[in-house]
Amino acid sequence: MTDDAAAPGFGVYVHWPYCGRICPYCDFNVHRDRRPGEAARLAQAILQDLARRREVTGPRRLTSIFFGGGTPSLMDPEAVGAVIAACRTLWDADPDLEVSLEANPTDAEAGRFAGLAEAGVNRLSLGLQSLEDEALVQLGRNHDAAAGRRATQTALKVFSRVSIDLIYARPDQTPQAWAAELDAAVALGTGHVSPYQLTIEPGTAFERAVRRGRLRPPADPQAADLWGVTQDRLSAAGFEAYEVSNHARSPADRSRHNLTYWRGGDWLGVGPGAHGRLTLDGVRTGQACAARPADYIAAADRGEGAGEIEVLSPRDAAVERVLSGLRLAEGVDFGALDALGLSAGHAEVRELASQGLLAEDPRRLRVTDDGRRLLDAVLERLLAR
Image 1 (cartoon, rainbow, N blue to C red):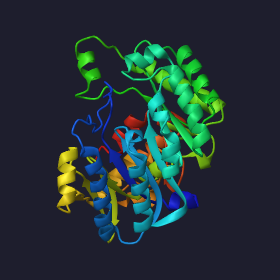
Image 2: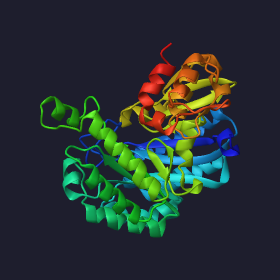
Image 3: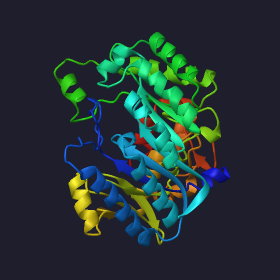
């Protein structure tokens, strides 16, 4: 296990819920900004919440801040800067503090990149989703492929680190077309690519379209072929698949904030619908903020922004470690899984290893390349008890 893996870090996740358009595949906590003055009140509520939560966390070494959403690139850069400054004041910030922000590649948002960088953002996660105009229309995006390319080039000039998101396993997508799209994405020159397989989530517009027969995602064998193309193409281009859906040119290009999640680290969640995990006096706790912006603002005014608090049992905490940690190529230390009775000598672990789905590793539970391809099935077998 590397020193990096031994110290997963402490992060702050900031959820900015507003979107100009809600995508038909999205099941995140997103809202239209339709109440005058609400966004400004929300920014203030987040600052209030952060200050109160410092009393709970105590002193920590802050390694990352992540602005997600929603569309946090629509946030006033001054408000972004105020949140970053507050975090740096409340906790001891790492000299190499990672500050990530999600953005859409519209021309209007790209025009804000310089202001966001000046506010303290040093890593941009850009939601290209596709480099094909027809696919972007199908995905309900409000930009075209040319805008995506322009935004990426602008981002590379402004931010020290840039990641791009892509969606594959789209209706009628062929392996040949996806390979060409991946090559075009690599040619943009970013250090990180996050290709996500399209998932039809309950309650979304896409889910309703599937039920009505208007949308036909690829069957499992075709989706598996596209997954294989993803791994092969990005690996050939020099990207390491350090996580199931995340590929980096080098360790320095990895998302440190997301690694905190996957490695079982601690993080605060602030903003409507944000979730967090903290280890307090050796006990793993979870928290979930009120989902509606107005409710979160009211809760922050009452000093209750943290929302619902849950104490996780040792077993539940270990289950989370398996679910998140096996997404990583490095896996999970068996010492973190005592509550599940999992070890290198466990019968199911040995059986999965004999099938080539788990690595023969006496210290860590790790999936092989074949195991990653069948990760859901591996997890189901490990956690069946």
